[in-house]
Image 1 (tube, rainbow, N blue to C red):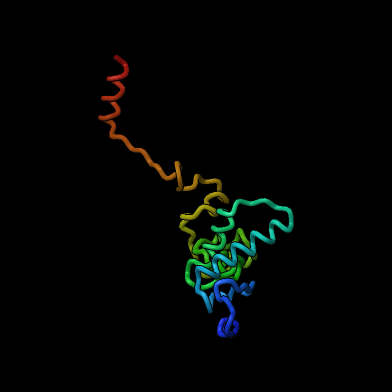
Image 2: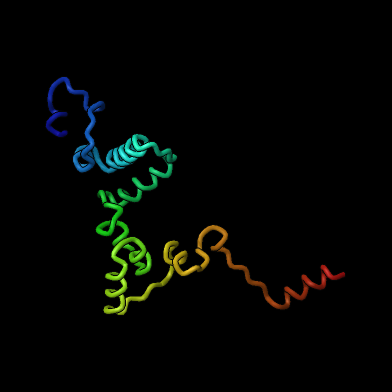
Length: 147
């Protein structure tokens, strides 16, 4: 793409490549992110799927938020998770559990995937709220409503 742009008469704002790494190198991470989202959308539409572009954008954002292009799979984003359970839930389950046990790795259970796996309420949205009340305040509330 860099050499094509240099050709006189080529409109650099209207050339297209599906090589996301070339687009990253020439135009930057935001252009690469847009290309990834566009290519995913095209592929899904060709296969007859209808998925909102915002969902696809989340995937593209996740793949490029570091400034580089990372795969979703075990050698990219899924494989880099801090949680043993989150890594194991994607691929190579036994390998992740064996490595975690050999190296004494602990799972703090902070993420969504690992909490869903163990059946624990996820600490997001309404699951993030924790209410506490002092006993004396509870007595005041009870006496107010019992009158």
